[in-house]
Length: 411
Image 1 (tube, rainbow, N blue to C red):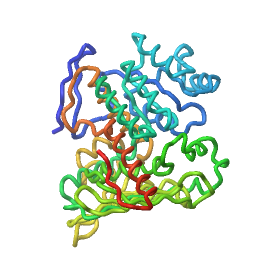
Image 2 (image 1 turned 135 degrees about the horizontal axis):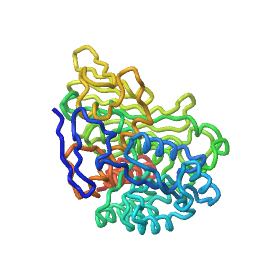
Image 3 (image 1 turned 180 degrees about the vertical axis):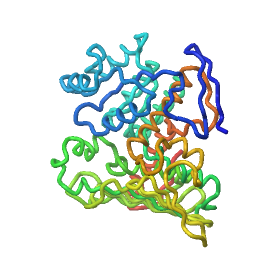
Image 4 (image 1 turned 90 degrees about the vertical axis):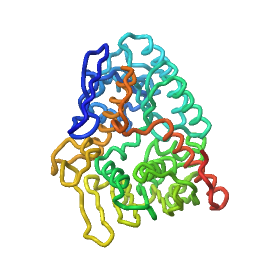
């Protein structure tokens, strides 16, 4: 039987299901939370993913935004998003101050802006008492990430890092199968994220491609920070282990650029198991090829983001097993919580974003209601995970700059 939790607040009495066959898309407080956006306006693909996930989750109503640094674009985007004129802002500082003063002000903000702006925007909203949903990477420097973590702890607000791949049902299935001993002791792991867009010259890809290759904008790494943080986070999430040390080489395998478009990273997990992390944005024919394979002394698991509903499991010496996203037939309760349609009715990237926003809604609603969620109710990535991502980037950059020596990840 699922665990039902009664929540009594000034909003009324509601119940939530923390594990088991729950409907994750039922708002915890019996109403949608008020959400604002910074960035994500016209032409912003990442903003589309965030807004689609927020709406599909059923936990959020988008009511305010500073959707672009260009005032005309900001207000045109707000009209398309059906945000009232008086809650469309051309400046995020103004938005933070104004929304904090309103009785019906936003309860959380999604920050969907270029990397170098994350720190100061997130800090402004945390100081205004507003919970933060933040796109990765957390910042562009470790020092800024540490400062943001300290601010989050000091304010007591929630920071959710948006690593959506961890919110696919079959990633959650693999994570808990590993926790339950399905592969035994992890002996090696391979993770990769391959794309093709950087094979062509930057002007073909627009301004987003340009700033992603500007060291003054993104810091010490480009592709390693952009998609490498996804690969690192998936590895950490699924195995339950952090990387202890790395040996990295950065390369330019596509059109000439000032920063790397490819990285080869050897790593060792905390238990000493070796592994390989390969990321590239210059591999023609590769689209969104995030794949992870984990092998232990009792079996192996294989998941591919381009086939997200399928998880391959091979117990040592036995026939392989194929798990298909759905209910029953070996699917664990933790994965069932992220499943919303029967098998054969596809759930993919937007559903993972919706799961992320639903779990963020549960976490933020419970904080605002003064209610401590039972362990395992949600499985989100917070400010600590954001800092870990920055430490990974820095260690890779240190290793590359030293000629490929082994570098321990700092704490």
